[in-house]
Length: 194
Image (cartoon, rainbow, N blue to C red; front, side, top):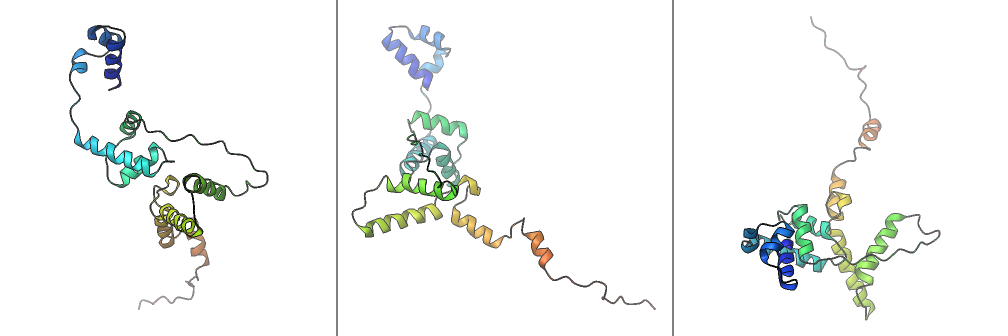
């Protein structure tokens, strides 16, 4: 796709024949002349990708790809990268973080506060306290129940918490076995054979 556009640009601007432009770029002329076949699956994928990118403006290509996988779309990393670039989707560059002295002890809280600021507080204007409470609560529900996180195995925090509540930790299992009351095997009677 990019080579086709480059050849079209060169032939239009530099007044060079298509044959010479194809030879310079290294593309066969039949590839240049044959239009790309229509692919309705890819068109639907691009439309969904754009929708997710608009819904999550501070997230990038990998996050959108994880959401697509969760929705059962079949898209690989290379295709996703190519489609993301061809659609011109970009994530705004992060601002440099200012270092605060004495406040960097809890990185998890600082990371959460930064996400809250970037995704909600900097993008919304609150007119009333009730509106602020409503939007913060809506963002909290989205963060906990709909937003997947790679650190949690591509699960939402609520799903991860529910799974952890039912499955005991591997590190704690030996401690639980050690703390469990032990049966005394010495006092068990063994029936005698007569």
